[in-house]
Image 1: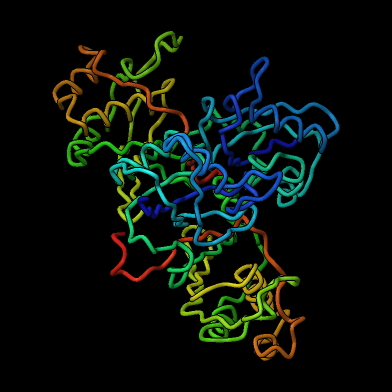
Image 2: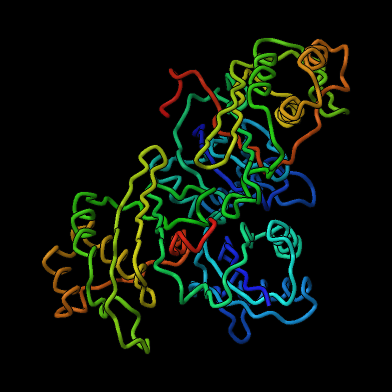
Amino acid sequence: MFNTLIRISYDGSNYSGFQTQANASTVQEALERALKVIYKQPVRVAGAGRTDSGVHARGQTASFQAPFHIAADNLPHALNALLPADIVVTTAEYMPENFHARFDALGKLYSYTIDRAPYPQVLKRLYSWHLPDPLNLELICQAAQLFTGTHDFRSFQTAGSSIVETTRTLHRVEPVELHADNMLTIYFEGSGFLYRMVRLITGTLIRAGKGSITLPEIQEAIEGSNPAAAGPTVPPHGLCLEKVIYDQEVLGF
Amino acid sequence: MFNTLIRISYDGSNYSGFQTQANASTVQEALERALKVIYKQPVRVAGAGRTDSGVHARGQTASFQAPFHIAADNLPHALNALLPADIVVTTAEYMPENFHARFDALGKLYSYTIDRAPYPQVLKRLYSWHLPDPLNLELICQAAQLFTGTHDFRSFQTAGSSIVETTRTLHRVEPVELHADNMLTIYFEGSGFLYRMVRLITGTLIRAGKGSITLPEIQEAIEGSNPAAAGPTVPPHGLCLEKVIYDQEVLGF
């Protein structure tokens, strides 16, 4: 078998997320359908992260065991010819046999994009959340600082999750304003993310920017003594999985 | 009657262009449907330019005679509440009674965007033409220079047009490379444009960049002695009407 790592970008608008589930159209299902055509047998892919319904990706990754060898440079082209236009494989490479896209990931980089124009920027409407309300960027940046570092993020996950260990490290929570475009993008880079964590933190940051929650209240939410101060969950279509981070020494890209 | 000028942005993917035509979904038709709800009677809009099927706009304009007065600042909001999500009215203002969105336009600015990444950038696929072929940008810039100024552009229109006067002035034909995004956008600003002129000139520029047509051959096409050197017509979804230009003294935006 040939252990293969692919990088995948997709427009999540028409998918119920990455991971296969019953009675729903998913990116994994589309990938496995294309791989089955190429390899003439079922091939199961393991994604680095399950993105939620409606969430996009520029740099999702997945690994799979290929039953025979195809030149890695030809694989994206072969897959893209079989995939729908809203899923594009951008790279492929062969990995050591014990490599796994999810278990070997050191972290992930997500972006959340907010359209601040008075009316939605129509050509960006599918990939940003329109929020014309005035926002205090200074407060958003100060609140973002509170989230960086290692914290128990149990208040920043959707209830009902079965995850027990909820401590994660965020290396970067950085709001970046693109004035010319009237866009605000918040980057989240971390060791791992709980279910809906990015969207819950973004919702909290936006409330800080509106002045409807104070920095001490956010600090309490992070410390676990005021879980109600977390959120709300912002819509999925502003979220994009930008990159899955691996040890550079094991990766070609 | 209240002569009203609106600025409209739209995702042209699902429309047969701006202008109303039989058995086709158009932006004009959607606008007139929304205006009829607001004004409770049929209102006819005159667009500044007919964009073709699949072409986008960030700054199309249209004027119409409103039967009664509504605060101009409220009009975009009222229209957007009635319009589909892929059409957004961004400004409205009242104009002198003889103003006409098309006849008073001094010119237009179009952009044509080319995605040069090896595989399509999936979140930009609806708004750019994917062309991974190597291009000589220096040659494209030199060819672009040939088109600027006043020329008889009769070779750069789709055959069958009934337009007799085919001289137009292009003030700007400027290729702009966004290296970080792997995108090439060519801006066209001019007094007016013949049918499919931007897409035919873009096709010619791309051929220059591929080295499959020489600068002297393009010069011949512009001078009319070698019409076969013009084109081909590039796909509509890379094209966007950025702005309709009016005398600043008559306009608030």
